[in-house]
Image (cartoon, rainbow, N blue to C red; front, side):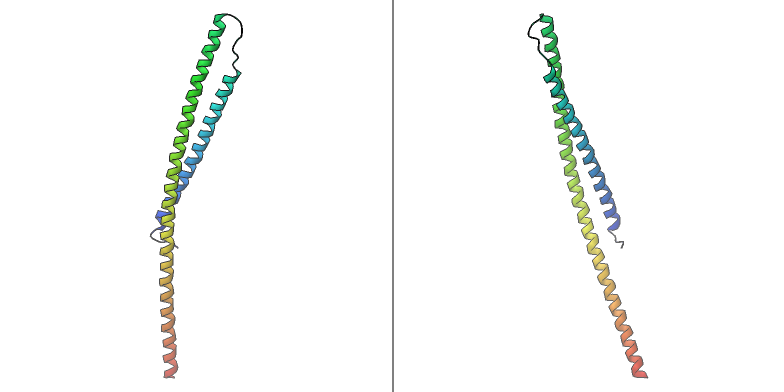
Length: 140
């Protein structure tokens, strides 16, 4: 049954679905960022510091360790950023869901009101028919 709230409910529902999709995408991005962080940590653990050799070998390994540490820090910031984005999108989804539920409730109330009015009209019509039939019996 259509009410004045039906178009709004439809709009709020589509907005809520869009927010749900954005949350799912943010979860995927966060997962990817965490995987990259884990991979960079594993790469750091794989670096072997030489126990003997020239100073050049030590400097090369130290440069690689420094570069890997910068990559790890970058990936940590990426994870933190994606977590913040996810939290913001989850809050938006929560707000969209509340709005959707509000208008869905208002639509349900409107439908109940319309049904009640229809029932009252039908009862009045039945009463009128009953009165007309009663009067016809009196005439006959």
